[in-house]
Length: 461
Figure 1 (cartoon, helix red, strand yellow):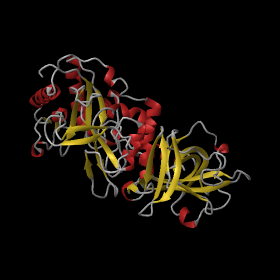
Figure 2: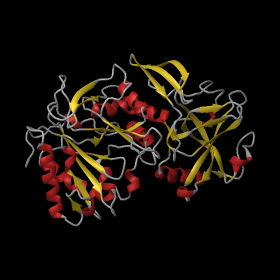
Figure 3: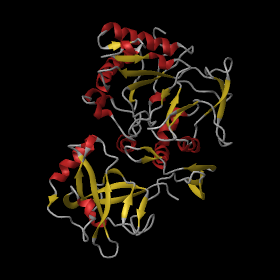
Figure 4: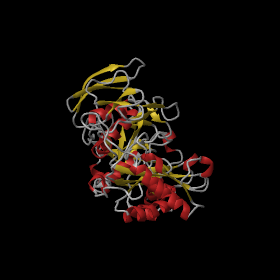
């Protein structure tokens, strides 16, 4: 049983946005050809999955294609034609959907994935039924996953037992909407983490993970989890550590390790949207290793944004490169950003000491725009360089992790060219769909992070 489907559609019209989308494209009106007669049929609409930039770009394309009447063989329902603008059916796009209603002939729970310039609209067919017919699209679950049973859940939600890479786990409440503003549900969260797993797993493998769960969606309460919860599968890798991260002091708990795809899907099924990890790993014997990464977190204070963070990041890059490090920038998926660099240190607190010294240096140079002080009252109008993320007891959002914000944004690796060009926060805000599209076009921008050289001892640490 696929969690979500993908299919190609023809753009036949659009509706202007309302509320926060006033002045922007709100939704696209979709069509496909009847597989038997070839007539153009109305398939519904899609209003989520667009970045602000894409809404502007699509609007410009559609303005040149306007026609006075709808292009369908049968008029759409009257309510669907309210405020509609029609266009020549020459552009092909791709959407995700979770249901096709056979009677009404509508795609339900749709999300936009992007234009398909490689496809001819004459070849785009309407589905005969969900999951069937020509051009029905492939399931978005992992290729290694196979559904074995499907039973009603205790709360009425569907429970599906699947096999992923030979490991069995049960997925539940897949229709639960976790991002209400976008209609983004748990099955789409699982789909995202499944597809991003090849580039995300290297950043969490071997690191005790802290998850932040939103079981009722991002509008509900959140739960932080460090220890292995009851009911975890027997195959889940774990490590026994103290609350402080060491094995020698503090309360000892079992911590989960997300080392493979089954573990990642299991975590996603808990509605664990955010994944946080330390900058150190554990050895096969369970002992904590010295940190292998330096992370510098840039947190914009009141009155500043990621734009100001980018200016500070450019200055930090000069210092890091001068000290023999190769920094890689990422967005946080929230308001700020991080810089990562591979390190080799001779003691656990070396990276933290180095980052603090560097933060204090920039704060002295530009005290009106940068601060190295944690007190929030001191951050207004400034960028806080959070050096403390390197403390062995601290964790940082992992690259490619979703965030528990209003929309399904993700911590996204970016290029230094994007950092230099950033003039508006929206330029560096990426949703899950944006991340997947960037992986196709740019690849993994952090692929070389752990292979870059680093000085054996950080200067000033």
